[in-house]
Length: 308
Image (cartoon, rainbow, N blue to C red; front, side, top):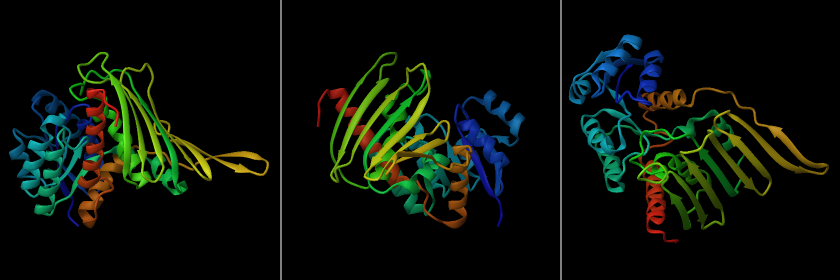
């Protein structure tokens, strides 16, 4: 099979890593990038190769697929243009900042017969993939996602910016309709929420408690899952996990066998494999829309100071 011709739109904090990985990946011909900051695009081209394009339209004439890593407010405009051109799209999370536009992107992708994958990278973390093999029926899930103040993406509240990672994984793990949502959050350094906590109760009885902060002195990305037969603790950053089970002699703790690797590489590799195989991605438009819907609901609860 011929290599997939691929470009990157937006080579900032995340996009430059998309380009780096594609430039080294088998089955891919990295064509180049477009960014409104031409000097940054030029420096990247000097490092990894590829052309610097003058516009999105010019890039689309040369590629089969793109990664879009631009500000969320531009996702719909750029994403719809790429999908309408018949180009496969991997777009960074959140899919858009509007539920209506997110649903429309899904429709455009379906109409044009192209893949729409969304960058919920934790689903591709080797630690998470191992975790799924230990699950039966989660009863209580606790997530902590903390990081120092990023100074970027602060036009989005922390729920849409960061918590949405955990919301998507929880929806994937629980497989139940939501019964109720409680949420609180505060703005500290931004005009939008910098710290948030949400408690989600599902109709099957499962409960999830999620805490997210972007003004923490430390980085933390952890998930803990309690089920009838075990307690599972997973550290996304360190890609380490333990499973605790009750035995006759007490509590047994065993490490989870995790083969470490770069989650973004696995995400991009999966995107390419889906293009070749025409399979649906792990996190496609449908999954991303459901995560966005929940994130928007939580944000609205926080901003209205109402509890549902």
